[in-house]
Length: 400
Image (cartoon, rainbow, N blue to C red; front, side, top):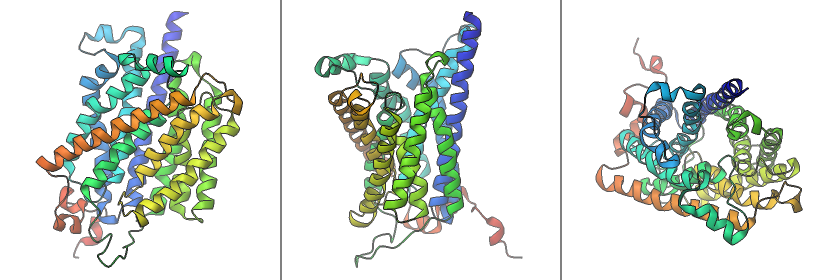
């Protein structure tokens, strides 16, 4: 029975990897639909190239940092057990590569291309896997220490904190160090609106992310015998909760409506295996409302030009998800138990602190050395023509 078991597990996690890989197309189209037309090509290119850099770096360095193993052995050894360890790497790589894809949306329209690739290499090679190893591979005995204090380990089943909060809080220093897009906030106090360039592409990106997220969450079991229908239904309930809350709080705005389900899914990741579906609905609803409120505050009152709202969406909603797992995962709220709010508070705070610190270090160093931002002229012309020498619709620019 062992050989069919191994093959089933390899296929199971491979399908999960493919579904999360598809989510990167969602990141690309969500960004493409949100930025102005002169930056659409750049949005597509960034996500694909960031993923490629992430793959090489995570294969060579990052996976070893997180899990203490490497792939510099013969192919015969790598193929053992139907290559399960290789496809597990593929699955976990898609998580790691989500970090630069998240950051990309915050720094869109004015960030230089190659410095961001360097940031991607550092983040995926060390910053992310360092924390990943602590939470998911018992590094440094920190989980044991948290358990000794609170009675439970920090629980993050599918990455509300490990992936999303980390990505969102890494993005915040990058956004602040870059500064707002030119003419976004005028000296007279007026705010120049930069509406989405394509609601259909924005919606397409959101839908691709929503569908792929069921691989992100359900396949986090990593073996077929641990699959849980509870995770699937909790993901569904959080998604619709986020949608409905964003609809209500966002006053029918389609940008909020399509980001609301993503907020709900971000928040439910951590406790999707232990919550009751009604708890997941509440967690998603809170996340959808939080996203709308915090996006509005950051853009209009605090004048933080986070283009796709990745700090509110991933950073804050991911933080909420880490804490919510300790509330709605408890038996008092209909969950399976085995979680502690104290443990969730400690683990979440550690993730946020690590992300902010390393965001300041990585992007601060790049700003002081290579520079992070396009010139005023390049930004005015748009990243598409300045970096890639072509626009999204070049046929419209031909002089017949």
